[in-house]
Image (cartoon, rainbow, N blue to C red):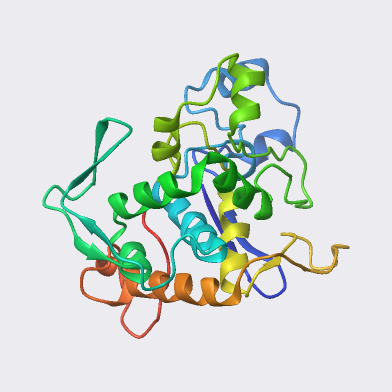
Length: 262
């Protein structure tokens, strides 16, 4: 799935879900064998993955984590965490994706290098309740309001969710996994695009739409620290433009790209 949108006016420029199907089949009377083939296709082509499927965001969730930690003042932009390739939290080791470690990381470098140990440490200091507040500020538990039907919400786990849905308490070790976008946290690709737009546009919640004349509400400013957003944007720029950035190989000559690998 892929979503491209204008961060300023919320317009969807491209929305792709693959594997797809031939829409011309539905222009005429659909044959039973054609309908059966669509339903039984193991790739589920009738699902709009961009708005109907939720996924573990993985390291792209670090955008939210960094914004949360800096906004809350748990870390500042100069706080450094040493990554030696793994960290021990709640009595068990959690590895970084880079076996040799990243060394000393501040917020900008941690985003640029996607350092797991930095975000594990931040997650431990924040705790699941404070972490959960920020995906909700980014509206991951709500529909974006896109002007086509079938949209699904994301999932933001916390203590209450665990007791209600799973029937047991939240374990601290799960917080470490959530800190890098693993565990129960889920997002749609459309929500990821809307969240990224909020970071890019200075903290305004947008309403994605496909129709040019769609009746959409005005963007809503949310309680995110402007300095935190600036630091996160600098880190996202470094991802695609500086040596060591995890998306440097995707760089397009003559174009500036900011982003986050996951």
